[in-house]
Length: 121
Ligand code: FES
Image: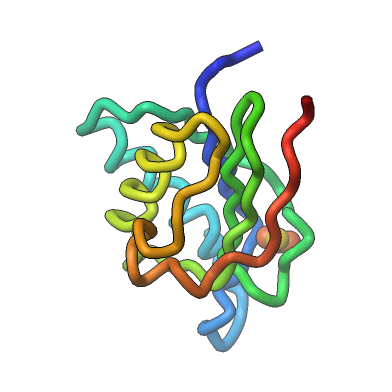
């Protein structure tokens, strides 16, 4: 089992701000750009592609999770938020409990939390 935090990105999402689905999907574009961006930096979290986080109407969707940490689902994301998503992942990875205080979250992501999920003990 990994001890690293993880950013799971839904690759089948359509952006909530788009008029319709694209091929590749907006979520796939977000995943590809995150992987490209993270390859240039030493990220303290893993990135994984997933299909559907059941937040389809508010895509693009991602989830942050980690051992012993609260999990968070974020929605209404787009590729313009890559740098902020990297920063949020970095801050999340730096916590013991997964809680990044609201004021310490990148401003563009403060209103994008869809759900938080309690950690396993
Ligand atoms: S397709 Fe991305 S949350 Fe359902």
